Amino acid sequence: MCRTLSHKLEVSSVIMFFSIGKKKKSNFTTCHKAGDYYICLDDGWTKFSKGQKQIFFKGYVLGHKTKTLISKMEKNPLPKYKGNFCCIIVDAKQITITHDIHRSFPLYLHGDQVTNLKIGKLIGSNVYVTIQKGFAINKNSYKNYSISNEQIPYAKGLKHIHKLLTKTFQTFLKHNKLPIKIFISGGVDTVLAYSYLKRLGAQFDILDTEYKKSTKFFAKNKKLIEKFWAYKQIHNWHEPCVLVTGSCGDEYMMRNPNTVKKFFDFHGIDIANKMKKECYHYKYFNRPENKKVLTAKKQYFKNIYLAKMELFRNMSNDHQHWHLDNTLYFTPFKDLQLADLILQLPTDQLLQQALDAKITKDLIALNNKRDLDLLSKYKNH
Image 1 (cartoon, rainbow, N blue to C red):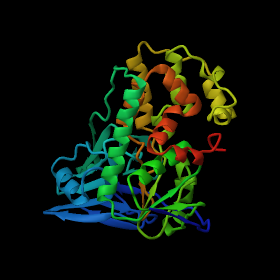
Image 2: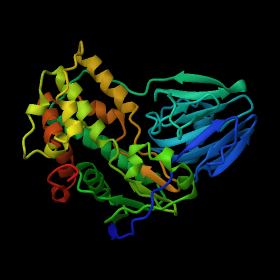
Image 3: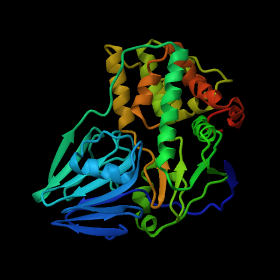
Image 4: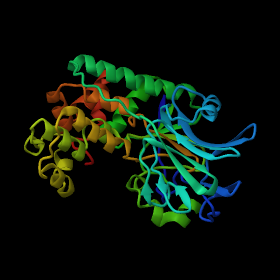
């Protein structure tokens, strides 16, 4: 069941930001004292107590209730759960920053703080951090993706991808208690998300314009926040709710200029010369900045495994949408298992995906062919 909402466009807002360091940060909404350190947060976090431990959580996890997840991560903070969340665990010995397996947010190290607000020395997404006495930072590496060398027939692969995405939406809807909203921009990713919501019988509101609320946090941190490009075009509300986004659909589903350039260079295919006027990506790929990428000097990889490793490293560190205050973002396409399945499809089908979003369109059609009528002729036009 869905209904359409109209809203007035307002000022931009705040992201799921935090800072852990030696000094209290007045530009955050709340700050909690934890031994020698301060944990400073934006709105929308939940605090839990587990014995002597204090736990701060924000976001969602697929397949688990939040309280169940907290109990598991409090015992073992190794990132292994899908979703879009941050969990900060404080005990007498250390502070642990853990998160979903694909880490939806960037993490930066400064001399006196670890934060995702102020850009600094980037900590890779395959690392979770512990902070001990004297602000000693421990970087705990883990494996956040796997690469398959198998190639599977298109029809079979499409069914596998469809099954994975269906499970992603089902597990989210099972535990979500908040109102759901979606803005159908005419792009293939938001239409794909809409098609799964509708097929699974979710209740949601369709937005017909952008809706953004200003907050005190944004006013204080506007210059820092606007350095994150994905938050120049996003929605949020004061009341708790969920916005379903197409975030990472381009990158994880072989439609991003940098991704397709690397992949097709390995296969000896000049994708810039394959683009035809009738293709969905024709205007987007012919933008000066994207055309420059696609016509750049050919990149060489020794084998397909090394080529995929490069793609996966880039994808896993491409952070787009986490959360703004009381608005949570459901990001179903930020899943490296999805990317791995996509890259197992035949090369000729991946080429059609890069040119005309064929795979994504075929997934929409599996849900409802009529949903294809919602697509714009060209990406971002």
